[in-house]
Amino acid sequence: MSRLFEPTSVGSIALSNRIAMAPLTRNRSPGAVPNDLNVEYYRQRATAGLIISEGTAITHQAQGYADVPGLYKSEAIDGWKTVTDAVHQAGGKIVTQIWHVGRISHTSLQPNDGKPVAPSSIAAKSKTYVLNADGSGAFVETSEPRALETAELAGIIEDYRKAARAAVVAGFDGVEIHAANGYLLEQFMRSNSNQRTDQYGGSIENRIRLTLEVVEAVTKEIGADKTGIRISPTTPANDVSDPDPKAVYTALVEALAKYDLAFVHVIEGATGGARDVLPFDWKALKAAYRDAGGKGAWIVNNGYDRASAIEAVDSGYADLVAFGRPFIANPDLVRRLKEDTALNPLDQATLYGGGAEGYITYPALA
Ligand SMILES: C=C(C(=O)O)c1ccccc1
Image (cartoon, rainbow, N blue to C red; front, side, top):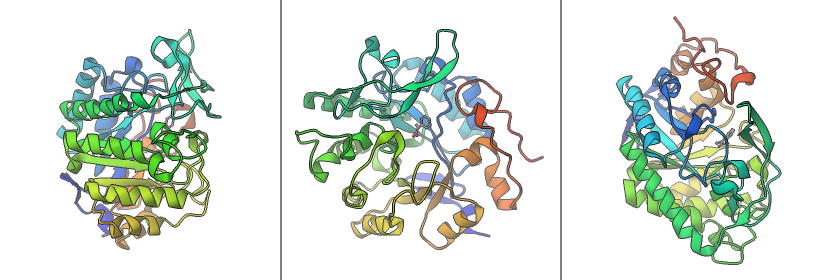
């Protein structure tokens, strides 16, 4: 049997197998508070070696989509506690993805209907999900952001630290810092969205600075053994780009190597899309991390199937493989991969927003 189904650990978190559930936004937590539907959804998927929860806003300012959960209200922490308890009682492990959307937001979702914040006042050619007056959801153009003042960045780093602490209080086994998919931290790393002239803009060293300061704050608060990070070197998601992703992300992983993180989670290619969106040597990126002393588990994601996941792990390249949409449609994905059985088809119409349908209604094998 493949090592994909064997136990392992990421940091201090012991896992029953090497299959992770990737973070998946589902827009089913009104008021940013996790609810019983969320409890059932995550409980059903607790056979994953590691569940990485959907992106969870660290503050109101960090909120970019309607009905995504947060970690900045006491009732949200209570709500998450019911989720983590259910997953743990079912024998699973779960970390939460702590998230600041930056410019991928809308004034109607921001404190005092203000502008979203970003490294520079450059609007993303992207959309976000808001609620209409009648409660229906709709994807609309993201609003033009304002550039963060240098003096505001210490406060945002503190927000990540507080969210990491809140995650542990809510019973999570750890956190994944969301530094991917064109959200705040990646907006700072990519040169088309970051045109700052202070110590957070210009050179690669300056553009990865905020991400490293967040990693420093979170690992100091809850321990590197409970801290992971997600990166997406070549994704065009949310209108980010950079002329030299190899240089940016090699510098990043070499700097991350000294933090002894639990894991580094890499989206290989366009998020949920083409793996070859840009030429990139994924194995060289991991080698750069290991050569710099990085010991964290290497989690790979994007377009893997049973055969390629087994190959990735059994070859020694990947420590874990994360699956996104397959876990939406197959709560018992681990069993189906182990037994090589058919997978349920995905219902695109119920991915975002709504209720039980297409969320907790996918059947498990008898
Ligand atoms: C958190 C997300 C990401 O990381 O891409 C997301 C948000 C909205 C829809 C899909 C995905």
